[in-house]
Length: 452
Image 1 (cartoon, helix red, strand yellow):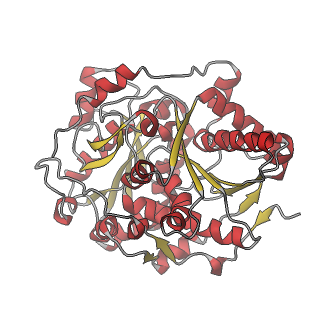
Image 2 (tube, helix red, strand yellow):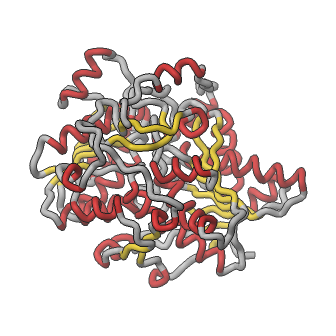
Image 3 (cartoon, one colour):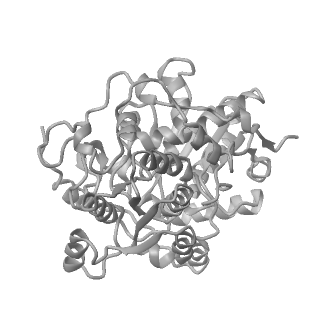
């Protein structure tokens, strides 16, 4: 019985899939935060290279991957697809469970899939330094790895809660030559403003993004890089789903259900978009696409579909997305990569239109599922990935009740080797579950920017 389904290096996709080509109507445009008018390429040129701006707005279905990027991706791609037979047996389910494992990259997650091309395009346009944020540290590690390959400097603003919880991620960044700061800092006007209001803040991705954007905008040799949310980031991650679809086809399978965790949307888009494209074009109209988010930051399940800033200070373009409000600061849960107030406009659009759906789960249930997965399949998953595992298990158990032999595919976005403190907190009973009162969310949403 085959456990790993592998592709040869020469079978790695050489083009990214752009789901914008298959939407029924174009996305609502990003807006200039100063004027409220649709953002132009010139508005974005102070922090992004022109090729990434072009990809952000592109409508062609496929975009070629540069050969120099492919050569670096070959270090870990194509990534393996696993059949989770031991998990299936433990659950007693007729469902067939497959997972794409992205933990074999140098940074231990899916994030280098976009970090490498982003560093490449910036280097090609003469940029010498990248400023960025990171939640759990996976993105910061990835961009530090990528910039080291292109002889670039890198500064990372890491959300304070994760900076304190996950010191080894900071050390990884330093090994690859990047500097890492606990956000909010006193290095930026935004950081100083936040600290003045709340010196003990746990930080948030919105705050860290503001610091990185301010840094990039005030240094001529520096651009900003984002690890999730934006269209070009999700585009680069589609290499995951393209590989998975080919791997499943080699064993005569196609998923009935595709599951991934959702924070900003990059890993969800990465595995789900090629299958969502099949759904949008009518090739496979019934595939169930599920995004899983923490109950502590229920963006898709309790947020509002509206224009909002991507950061706390209102420096970024205003995006049409599901949001909890740009100044919403989630609790310091251990799935730091999912503590974002908004979502990718593309992911948000798919959920709004019913092409995909969203569920939320509590962190104790998440770690219970992570333990089950580790004790059956052997891999200790990152807390973010464990959200997808939780829902995959729930669907598989439902199949046990109904007798349906569904094929379930989920994205195991990375390993949890630097997250063992979170597992320790789970075993010690120190992981509170959060369920936000709707009134608190309504308060944050009341401060959305007034546009249109």
